[in-house]
Image (cartoon, rainbow over all chains, first blue to last red; front, side):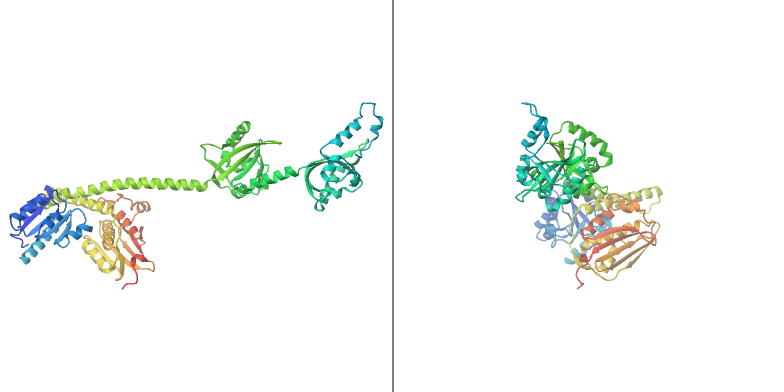
Length: 125
Length: 494
């Protein structure tokens, strides 16, 4: 895992998910920031550069797709939801995301997906 | 008037003799009264006979009675005369006679022997009444009876059948002659007969128009012993012979069937409403549990990272249990949501072999289980995601049926009509009762099962127009066979 130093923003309104995902990724060596809704996610992104965005679809105030819509050039994004990605939602985000993952995401799958996303972010920069 | 007799000569002055009185009665009777000799020669003829037949007495007396008889009924007349000369009476015999002008007339005749003082039969007297009107009315009545849409049974107060129409023959399977004069109870099942006799007796004591057996299920009995539901309306009518009751009987099998179907449809609707309310709740629960279960899974992962292979056996055991149970709850959530997610299949053509390989890759056999795949590289026509889910669930099921290890055989082939995929395990098989229930939601024989795996398979297969069965394999173990219709395997592979 050559993840050290990459910045990851975890945007999820569920404290249990957000805190454990953050800890798992910190243990992997990432610089992890957290946001509990879409507005906060935009604020954290404004604070400083983020390589990988782990974005929940359903969040209060501003949901995941709305966060993506507000960003001219979003970080490499992994979209996460308890619901399947189809219909209009798929069309809205398909071109903007790196991957879609269905909740619950198993820790090992999470780690490898973020590693791939980080690798993509590095190769792009 | 040609009645002759010596009695008139001896009459007292002012007091008519019995014979002359009788003569006057006969002369003035509305009925046709005439007599004939043993050889059939007409010997007397009253005014009523003249009105009925058109012959005057002076014309017909001395002629054979056969002038009154249609050719086709000559034998009948000879027979009547024989009976009467033998001393018997023939009463109210309904027949046809010919008038002088050749027209037929319907008559009711009573013929009696005429005896001399010594009792010797010297001829026959006939009293005939014109019943043309009555006969016409009767024909009309019979016509109406036959034209009635319902089966009509007419019975007297004694409960015996007097008349039935054609519909009765068709409905109950009897010839009408078989029913005449039999108790009406012949048309109902034996167990109901006593009760019916009671009902009919009380009905005749106060007859009125009404439906029979209000609130009761009425049952008819055919000649062949089969029963069918009926509806009966009763109406009494007066006749010379007393009160008759006509029963209009209608077969309501179709209505009953329609009612039963309606009831079933209603029940199914209620059931589906209940299921959809239940489904909505299950979907919500399935989604709402995802986050807590995800957090618990993550936390367990972190604990496992920290603990590594620590020596505390008890702790390790408890941690393993937590991991196992969390996984089971997660699997239930996933099954619940996929069970409730009703998506119509979107079929496309795909390579069967490579898809089956991919299923084995994502759902590999557990340690101790071998997998054998016997599938040609067919093109399948199905919804790929749903197809993968079907196979994944069936495979998981097969793995779980072999906790001690074994072999799972997956065989696929195409027939003219179907794409068949059979998944056989080498477990202990299933008893028939269990096999029947395995496709019911939440029925499971396994500690780790959610009870939804095969239910989802069946739903997906049926959405493709196919079938899925679970049987015991001849070689032991159970085999799940999925059959997708030929249409689902698509046109000839490109």
